[in-house]
Length: 225
Image (cartoon, rainbow, N blue to C red; front, side, top):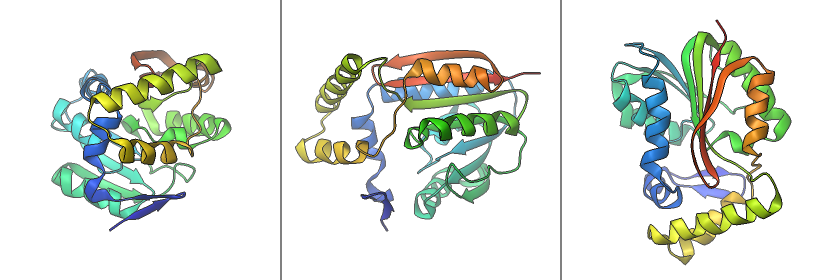
């Protein structure tokens, strides 16, 4: 079953393999996001995964924290159904909704997201960050694996060149890369520094970027006690 996203058609059955080719340092990025959740030291944390897709990030979180209770939110039912099939009894709840819709009722020990929030414009990102902070327990964690713009046009162009170079080296062919360009045309990436500033503005502490590989970054913040 396929899912329409903008002008792009997503097929949950074939979604995961291309992501490994199109996201450079896939294991490093997803592993870093999961390790940050593991550092909370909570045996059975309540984790909200925004834009959960087929559950790739939640699966990484579960490897780092086997006792995690996963709450999945995504706008495409077939995608999240694939995540439930992957994650099984670790899934505590499912919400089919967009990122601009109200978040599930928390509080959550952590809110995580991977390559979803860049579909929002700047003001919607800032509003989402505020709502995420309110959904967290005191000292709770927000982790975002995100595709970012460069600080200027020159840097953004460099990110684009390096992204294609990584993808080609990982085995992406002309057809797959062309499809990726079509999808990315709908993205609304923001510079990393701006996003870190927005987290601080809405009340996050310990804001940091743990990993950055050209246009891909893992950044986080903690809600204040």
